[in-house]
Amino acid sequence: MADIIIPGIPASALPLATAASPGAQSAVDKAKSDTQDKISTGTVPAFVANAATIAPGTDRASRYALASTVTLAAASALTVATTGTPSVGNKLIMVYALALGYTLSIVNGGPAAGTVATFGATLTGPKGVVLYWDGTNYVFSSYIEGAV
Image (cartoon, rainbow, N blue to C red; front, side, top):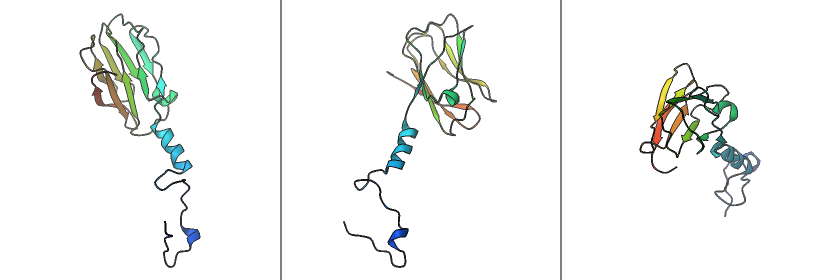
């Protein structure tokens, strides 16, 4: 590979590639990428009085899965708390792969509180939901269909 020479600019002023091969990421860029792309799994706590709360901004989780042992006693709500400091645009994925027996509402815990998604009592509907953080609230993005 030939050196690139730019008249009037000393070579010391040009950024040096730190990657071992062309097109590879530097160690700093790779660390940033690994952190941004990492999906960490949070735990959905037990439902008490037909309600539970998760806090992705506090526990730094981006994916929650309902355990196969979850049994709902009635229609229930899972509130997504807005505590902590998630990045704007941060996505949150919630999935389930069991018949709940009752509907499960996913509720935004921010100022614009309200149901943002609902899972049916059987496995015939969506198997998950994607929400995103707009800086104040968790907002519906899309349902996840099919196997999870």
